[in-house]
Image (tube, rainbow, N blue to C red; front, side, top):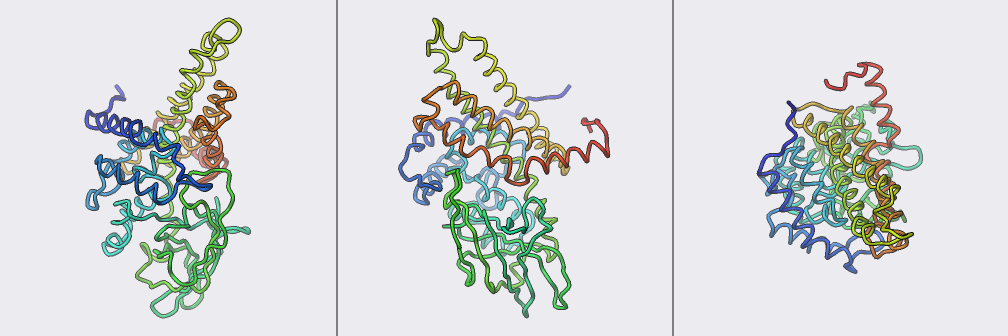
Length: 397
């Protein structure tokens, strides 16, 4: 028999997080310190302090640096509870890209690098960015198109290039920078990840893009690198193995997106339940209409399917399985139902759902990115199709 139950300690933590989000975080959703691009650093630090005091900060972080050390299944449960509020992941220090950077630093960084960059990140003292995506035909879903270059100069590397849609760059302390790397003879070694402080000379924020979402502190920036000198000791892992490490970071990060999106989807549906039970229309409440019941049932089933897909992928990741098929399937499904459930909630709330009286309009502006970040849905469908063509329909394996 398959056991879908959760251990008591994880249930207790889930309930603690849910109560924390309800009692401490949701009241901040109307805080004026949310600017055009997202919450201010002042608001972030205030929320982080509350999570720290509650013993809930950095549930994904290594215990060595003050995190709670949850595995992927544990993260799936806790991250969903945190995702119930638009500010929940920020408060618990599990918002992208910091969460993904914490994961890769925990696995790949040297002890010196961990103490310099990972420790303050897990403590919620600083923010970080992941700089891979490029404009003008550069790296995106196909990272092999990367144009940013790193060339050796003595014990250093000189980096030149441009990145864009770099989430959270303004105000962040450091970045993990991906650059195509060449040896002294000019041979292309492949991509390398570098640990880079954001105040390093030669790094310039060209502009902050006017995107439709407003959830990321600092927004999404275009960044130029002009003769940026980085010591070789700041290479993350080994030179030329950046694409391999990218999978170490991106595969779990796709899952943690799904975890947070499930919480947001649940919130969207629950934002309309009381309303449909009290709003009268044509002699009965909205909830009495069969069409409304079907919309709610579809939303509930979509979320539950997404939860099962996410938990299955998380369980496989905890065994050391790469789980690329399962991760891609969950990423496709949950990103689609996020948009669908929010649209349903807006429709059922009528005019009030379209206004800023509810968090639904914020969610709706956020939702389109779900089908783009960490690989477009179409790319993940290619992964699923290739698996199907190679291995058939035996999805129990």
